[in-house]
Image (cartoon, rainbow, N blue to C red; front, side, top):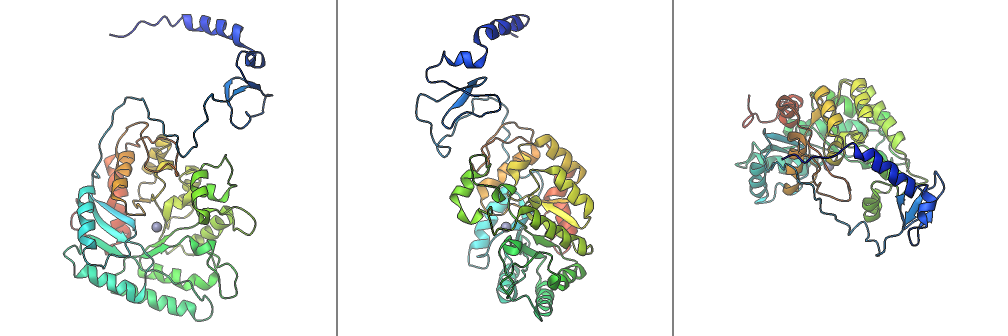
Length: 403
Ligand SMILES: [Zn+2]
């Protein structure tokens, strides 16, 4: 039975309320220990605004953000998503121990449960070590479930480097690698040339390698920079305060650090100079928090694709805009997870496939907020999960994917 609500009473009650409780500074007198502030000011540390321009400290000592874990009382639909709706290519895998006995068996049990058909180890490994992994995959009963990318060794960039790097790349691809990557974030952030200067992402000495990747028809999977918040001051307004406080090596703010904008400019210059090379920008190019920027990137560079690893919390907090983006750029998005934690994949399926609302994400230090489902149409899901990857990497096994 619907409840009858005398809605017409609400404005009258509001007027009554305002008469008694405004203005704010006066109201402060009614609260023990209340502090009044001026318009435009924010409440002093340890207090919160309880009425306009009135701040009050809680009676009990406030818990730290590490310990505050409120349980939602929202009662709403929950759609279990243990398995992806379509078979998945995980382009952003890390599995350095893949060649060790038993590792593939153990992983396949998880991949089967999650409906991941092909797992790509993007460990930036080249030469002998790559060959060992390729051989182990080829000899395995799971040979259709794993593929491996090769890497680039940026040490010693100078005369002769490019020739060696191109030769190695050609050998690795001939041996069965399906792409180049993951080019690590340290490329641009910290890797140096022999003279001690920072190796720029668009350094012309590297051009022959990117050209070779284009000629060989393989994608370059490249991680550039870090989330924007990592380049901002570590203060209480920083969205990733907790993560930055935990991991010192993620702090990129301050004198001597290359800026987010510089890295983006260098990356874009690289994309611009090699239109015949296909690039996959890991982690959505770190633009999942600014989809207009992501759209400009894809509009300007038809050779660029975006991968969704470790940005689910950005997509899931703007499900409507993200849905629109994925529909519009459905040929340009690829699935990747980054670290292999079987329990975390279902959060991705839930965001992409359902229209569930206000549900938990798996890691507080990425996001203190809840996620919402994007409810992607099936044809977009298919492209995101496997069709785009199969198009970019024709060497991937076809078994296990719907036609
Ligand atoms: Zn990675």
